[in-house]
Image: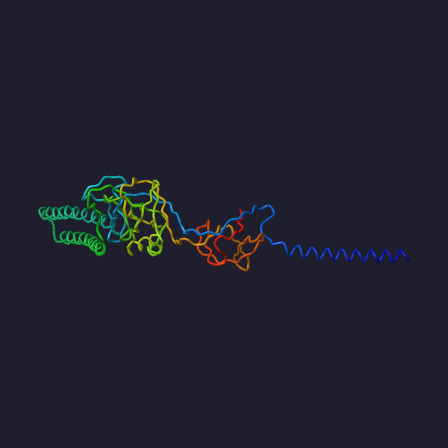
Length: 351
């Protein structure tokens, strides 16, 4: 009997202990906030005011200021007769353009000229044969008919070629050239090969116009995007250079799009003053898209996020408190705090 009572008491104690352990474990799990992995280093910082801007940086270069020259009609490139670095003089032919049928026209003109010369000789020989027949007392009537038929056939073949030449020339642009309007140095030429189709307005040759150098970058910035920026400048040899956007004309943009060209962005330097820069120098083109002065900000890596939104952990009176926040612009290192924190608040920063 004593043994049965002892067993019941022990079982009751085990049930109570297990129940207590279970309840305690659940309470501990609820009290532990999930922040970072156990080995993550956690530091603190303070909410403070600073200037924040959104910046994009693009590779660029210093290039000569230049004028671009193109053909004012569509056609096929006959040739570009200059190379970058060449010295040219006013009146020099820089490039030539021809129509689709240019070579056919040239060939026909040669054929017609040769045929006309041959016909002259041929007709003279026909007339000579006819005269010899007459002098020898032969019957010239049949010979005269034969000679006339031969001449008519030769003239018909010649006229066919002339008619075809006329049809080809109806819409032919002829030979169109780009001529240097002033003494200069060639800055760049088109990479298009001979016989390539060229749309009117496509830049073929660029000449140094002798003005202050320009800045260019391969990243295309539209004029509307440039106008919305807070500022745009270049850094060259440690010098800040303010830039003025050079827009493309509608026709230039149309040509660029139609030819699948990736347009560069060109800028004038607003006030070069005495800064030392040289053609070929590397330039960092810097777009400042947004700028806010003296706003509350925190490090970007202090921000957490879950299904409910973004939040930070503030340390107050030795306790860790979750604070929902509304954030503004970021420069990738720091982010603006619109709502949720006050200046001087101490917060966790992930490291």
